[in-house]
Image (cartoon, rainbow, N blue to C red; front, side, top):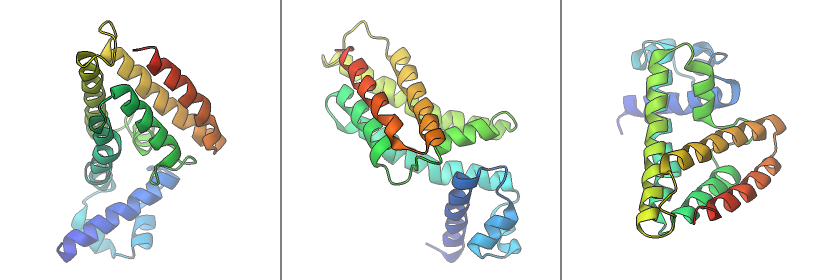
Length: 196
């Protein structure tokens, strides 16, 4: 990796950490520059504006993370109901990147930026649609292979599960505790079993 590419990636990674902890609106370019120890000129060489950098965080940091942490696990297991439950269990209780006290970074960006910025809305919607389509396909494959009843509506199940995930992340953030995830996971398992 060239030095300029490495510097750009380092800025994005450090800025993501700051934004995840403090929020996008309250994280200033000056704070990012101080944390990364790059010059203002170096920052503006890579990003014309803070919003350009924010969009790059979504495209270059969050999208690959979504693929490896949210999408690929759904595609690896034979039984889609096990895949969905194991994914949620991992995301809530085991994933190293996702901190209970800070919630879901995609949900945070969505709540903070989509009312004000069309570009953020667009890329965050693309990110969410990617996860949605994968989960729908996983459920439909489960129907074809006899793991899930044929009368189950894959889109409705997906929306229900994803809404539950984003909601319980917020409860965890409020309580600053993973304990609130346990009843959610128990109920999720019961719900998934009802789809057989």
